[in-house]
Amino acid sequence: MAHTHSIPSVDEQFEFTAESKRNLTIGIVAGVVLVGIGAFLAAKGVGGHEHAAATHGAAAHGHEAAHGAAAAEGHHYKWTTRLWANVWVNSVYFLGASVIGMFFIAYNYLAQAGWSAVFKRVPEALPAFLPVIGVVMLITFFVAGHDLFHWTHEGLYEVGGPEYDPIIAGKKGFLNTPFFVIRLVIYFVAWYWLWRVVRNYSLKEDLEGGTEYYEKSIKYGTAFLVVFAVTSSTSAWDLVMSIDTHWFSTMFGWYTLASWHVTGLAIITLIIVNLKEKGLLKAVNASHLHDLGKFMFAFSIFWAYVWFAQFMLIYYANLPEETIYYRERFSGYGGIYKAPFFINLLLCFVFPFLVLMTRDAKRTPIILKIACWGIIVGHYFDFYTNIMPGTVGEHGGFGPIEFGMILIFACAFIWSVSTQLAKANLIPKNHPMLEESLHHDI
Amino acid sequence: MSQHNDSAKFLVGVYDDDEVVLKAVTEVKSAGVRIHEVYTPFPIHGLDVALGHPRTRIGIAAFLFGLTGFLCMVALTYYTMGYDWPMIIGGKDHYAYPAYIPVMFEFTVLFTALGMVGTFLISNGLGPTTKPLMFDLRSTDNKFVMAIDLSKNKQSETEIASVLRASGAAEVNVKQF
Image (cartoon, rainbow over all chains, first blue to last red; front, top):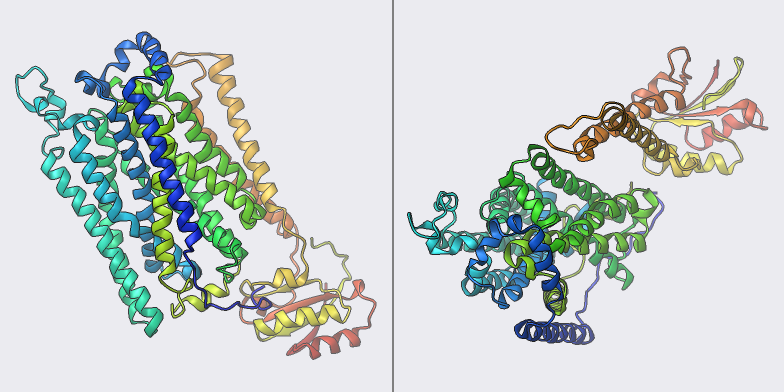
């Protein structure tokens, strides 16, 4: 009813209160304590119930489980590997959550979309976390790269050496430490710089108005999409796929992008709903929520489509060097990855598909919130099942380290987003499409 | 929807502007006149709400069509590959269901699409033998047309015509089918 509703004021300021800062600090401290407890237990070799189960299962599937990535453990397993593997899982996850903010902004600019203008500040706030992730990833790579990435071992490339691996040696042109680090730096610099530019335009537009910044943002947003079209795939290969060095899938870039995208959409929606509950973003109406719900619904299906396309071909072709990937997750390592594997499918596809199907569900904030949480948790398991088997193998599981690490990263991420949200008016006052967005009605 | 007897008589208000016709709907309704339907060259936001149309059940229909297609393929693949003539292909189980998910998906989509075409034709009275009600050809071009079924209203023809004119109609015509 475009003609009957009244438009609330667009002057709104988000306040990052001392109370929420305190809560987030408590969260981070609790996370550190949990990780500390977990690390202590792991160092002493306690908490080995997963380990005991794993050795039992590994005996049954011995030859498969020992193959591939697990062979990386030919060097003996150190308990710190699980710590770093957790840092890596969370880094990849929140890297996606951050960069998708820019992705969302960029394609909305390119499409000259009007509807999203009113809540544009929310996706715009996400990528500020990128430098943190970049630094954490580089440190992790330098400290624990040897434990996480099998391909970093020098012996694999020595022709005739005891560890020589012709398959991995054939990938040396791409998978070598200098090039890997250069790529990692390029990703973060390019993504962060392009976001910074568009963000600055957006802040200046608030003060000065006019369409000049809008036009420029379209150009830089398009540049980002061109960059991201390549780097989203290559970063997925580097950060996730290269852990299982022998294995490869041509779907992997898309698959990771789909996973990141729907996670980002769920986080954006969750932030918007939460802000609305706090009495902010009053101009966001049921139609905006409906469209965000459709977005999440559609991209959950897209994710499942890509997931299945990857699985289906490997399943049907039945080539041992490909099926090992699913074998490890499905029954390898004593089956400890079977539960995360199915929880992932359930939470990322079945759950949002059924919950978000009806129109009313997409317009009801509480149901949207439930679906968002399902997707957000589900995609953690997505990256968990992708990264953990190749890094910690039979030593994986869910304990204080996992929960603590999630808590640390999540609180730091919320901190970063809140800081950015507080920096400017919550609604971009002079955005040329704002008027259209305020009257959004479907 | 288009249930009508052969001697149905309609008053047709022709409007020049989408904003005007949207306001007119509320005015005409508040004057106690029942509106048969409004025809516009393009969709007008909020018109369905103003007319008080009940919520569409098209989503439920689509879901059921899709479910039918899905179940048909589950049944067919299971009957042929798992029950009637089980075969081992590529070392898989007799009924290797992941292999049949694509065809289940495609039939879900196909049944939904065809079902929706059928639903559209039936619910709009556009079947091969039905004759659609055409109140004013210009409603496909640049005019906004409000049709009022005289047999469903207590007021006289002149009373309704004056309500229509007062609400901004440029012309008021009589249409007999």
